[in-house]
Image (cartoon, rainbow, N blue to C red; front, side, top):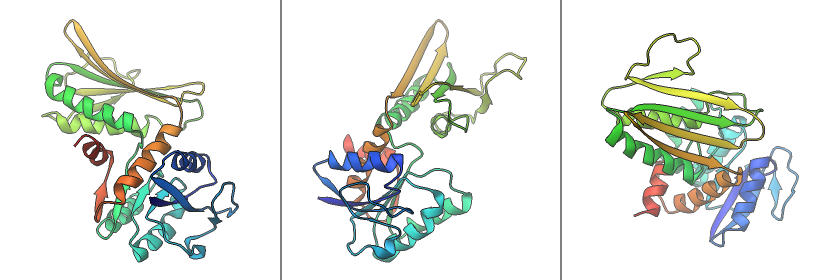
Length: 254
């Protein structure tokens, strides 16, 4: 049984993680950590790790960048692996996460969905076969409250495809300011915002008289919570180092 501590347990994503843990017979929530310190679930909730008496096997963090230092200090002192799902870290904070991975296992990914990370692997394979002769475009769609564009996931896909190409491409965001023919050395990235779309990503490989597409649709934010719990179960067995969804996928399909 993997015992999990959830940072940000009173938030929307923290609630999804708690639900995903309850539905996973191999895991249980030992306690939560939340700035409000009020329990909304069937496990104790503390304002900080200093109040926790028992030690978890893994920490899952879906909170705020401000919580990073306290979490890493506790994790390093007690040698507890961390699944870090929070976004918006500064470069300095990312550097601290990487430094911590030299002593403990750290799972850090910009998207915790197994499906989207499988899409990335499929896109990389398609790029190896088609990339030299097919134009590559990425379209991402999200709800009308999302502020950043393009999405971090779209950039993850673009970076993975870029690393697979022989020549580094140029990222072109939309095309309203470009009045010229598309060059071969481009990856187009386009954003759509509307309604309550949770998240859709499509990679288009457009060739001569044929088009190949790879698409993923997230119907609920629950998929990210399930991915985080799967990552926690995986990370509990690993040694110090930095891990991401490619490692989890490799473990699942080994």
